[in-house]
Image 1 (tube, rainbow, N blue to C red):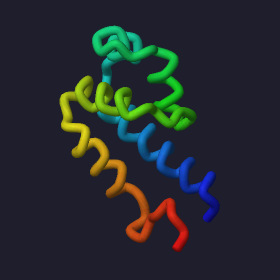
Image 2 (image 1 turned 45 degrees about the horizontal axis):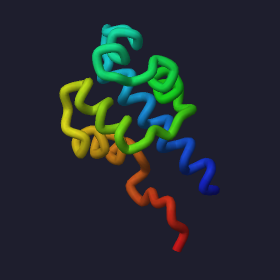
Image 3 (image 1 turned 135 degrees about the vertical axis):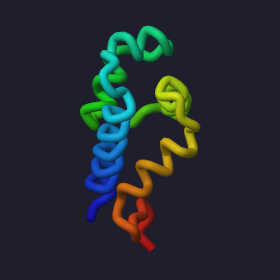
Image 4 (image 1 turned 180 degrees about the horizontal axis):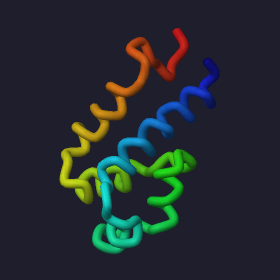
Length: 87
């Protein structure tokens, strides 16, 4: 698997969990209440944006989850032997 495919897989899993955690709240509400651009939130939830670390932390806090737990959810959804670095 090429690095671009691996990155796309991570973004797909991030998108999935971001949408699930947002639940029934609209993107507009989440973004306006948490100082996150609606367009950024939309692109993250479509798997098209690799968010900055600060945005990732804001997302976790917006969803009332610790950033490390949010990351753990994403990592657990990836293949067991997943790595971005080819050894």
